[in-house]
Length: 266
Length: 167
Image (cartoon, rainbow over all chains, first blue to last red; front, side, top):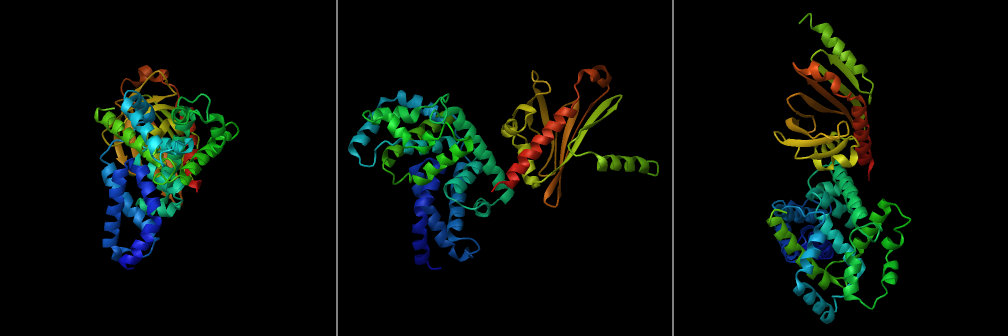
């Protein structure tokens, strides 16, 4: 395979790779760096690609290894990361002022509840152990097969199954306890609270009823609700969506807050 | 050696005939040992992961209220069990051979988990021996482990097989 052929194919799955890396690192700048590093590493070792797996699987494997090298040194986020970040945002008037300015001046900074559901998942999934987190992203969002995930993460299929099952159960448990969209007793209303700030004229109930996760929350089981949540994530490209500028702004805030929180031993 | 042979044969026979999923307890003057065996239709790596991920234990195992710490050789863990919910057992990881053997315990006793790959299944054994010179003084205050062992093993088999069958 020539560099040109490789680059052509790389560009086709680059948006997926960026989404994967962003949801893994919660850092847009680092994601851009990792995408470049992945291209450099892969293009300089093309001779070692034997075609035993797809090119995409091979490239995701390289990207995962690069990202894991950095992430292994860092602590995982707490399950209540979004609560910690909300408190920090409330104590920082500049944060909302900047966000409102973005929403008024940027065409890609429109607040959408669906996008915030994906954003919320990104933050909370970072509380999973790293291997569980990656298995979940690769299977549920990027549709890799179990054998391909085992190859990407250099582990066995039974281990992928273990990580995947455990991750799903944990996330289902966390959202069932926290998310007021699916459980009236849920403690977190952030998506609708923030929607009220950015879209004060909107009929919130109408907006919520357009979201299947909310509409089916009373009759569907927890597993199905989790699948609906995953469907929302699949449909949203965090670098291209209508509100991506705003969500990336929120993400930068949250990452800095959590890094500071973890540095202080939280 | 000659006189040990019948004893070894007897022990092998007991092990071979132990009813899967049914705990048995051997009581002696200075010790008590409860054992259970089960065939789990899952790869040992899945069973091993379930047994060594402390923070996830309480999710799938209804006999464990909480398990804190890291299950790594020499580490200490804090276990709360439904057998005695008021008490926190402070245990040490004494032996850890990945996907084969795990032993945790304190001065009074040890619990041993053994995994053996048999084709596409795992032969699981769990035993706990408690005892010592003072054992007769408090032997009747320690509840039977049989029911808890059976529940533990049922939960482990169910969770491991659910994972193994997932797609």
